[in-house]
Amino acid sequence: MLSDDLLHAAGLWHREHCELAPGVHLLRGHALDELEPLLAALRAVIAAAPLRFMRTPGGRRMAVSMTNCGRYGWVSDARGYRYSPCDPLSGSPWPALPAVLEALAVRAAACAGFADFAPDACLLNRYRPGAGMGLHQDRDERDFTQPIVSISLGLPATFLLGGLQRSQRPRPLRLEHGDVLVWGGPARLFHHGVSPLREGCHPRLGAQRLNLTLRCSGLDAPGLR
Image 1: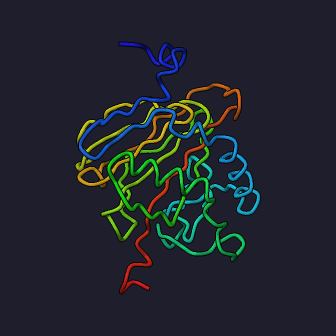
Image 2: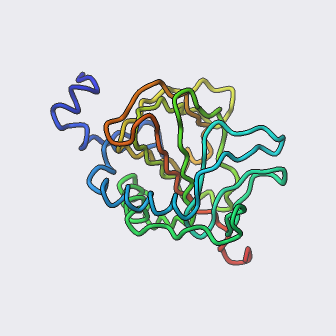
Image 3: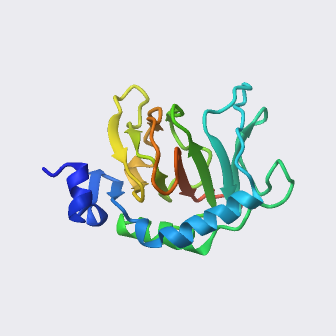
């Protein structure tokens, strides 16, 4: 089997599509074709809604800095975890979901077999070396029929793919710059996390990893408005 480095050198990484488990699809390099407009869009999002360290309901500062774009943004504070239409720092609506980002996520979801993905929220996490994220489930949405689309940019990371039970031993998965991971259906509530980021310097993004997680909050579903 070719190593990751050899796959990159041979130009095969970009075309690889792996089904890791029922409902879990890894699209290697899927974001690279849209990289320049995607990075420009992210710079605009961060300028409008700066990255910040949110706090857990218990008051602990999170290890990664975050911001959002889309109709709704995921927030955490003393009131709990939830989706909000407004940035709590400014009181203004979150920046709109960039068209290039929405199209990329919808296309990736379709490649993974999830037609009609309609994301209305994108959480942007910035990992610095040493930062990680513990195992958790994405349960703050009201529509579990829609998948989750996760886009990796910058330094490589070890993603931890667990199961429906927290006690299940997670599978380590290396995610590279431009990779897109999609999970839904029977895997929608799988536990997942990220191991502490290793030291490094990406040639385009420096000493950081940016992760874009697109979801459908379900808040606009009939009867929930």
